Length: 154
Image 1 (tube, helix red, strand yellow):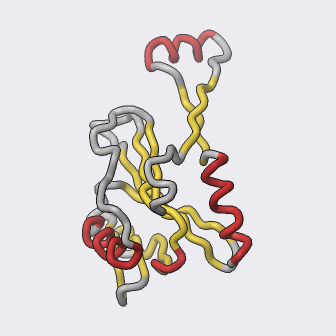
Image 2 (image 1 turned 60 degrees about the vertical axis):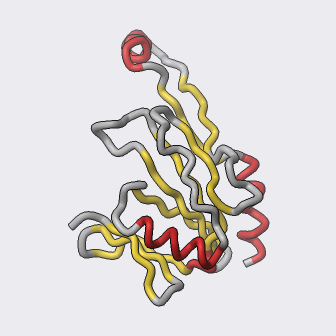
């Protein structure tokens, strides 16, 4: 079975990987939803969703492929609960890119900060000349600044 997203009881999102539960969270616990793409497509999955939640004062980052079955139904439920806009902004991206989808005050902001890894050694320099630069990514400081007070409050 392919992985799928589901909403149960109108309040809990689940990602099921085949027949086993991969992760689960309450819709009310969502702090942020983001999307990102890589440059690895089209033969490899290159478009992903991230859900940031807080449970007992700890941030949790849950992700899945953009193409996971059940996505549209889950996002319809999220739109009803959070009033979230329905646009995904990276559908045509073929490069590394990221953006916040929700909350609305951060929508459109870059989620990840990308930094080029400097090649060290002849092999790494050769790989860079053939494949392009390698990128390291992390959640942007402005996004973490937004999330941290919410983590402490709950």
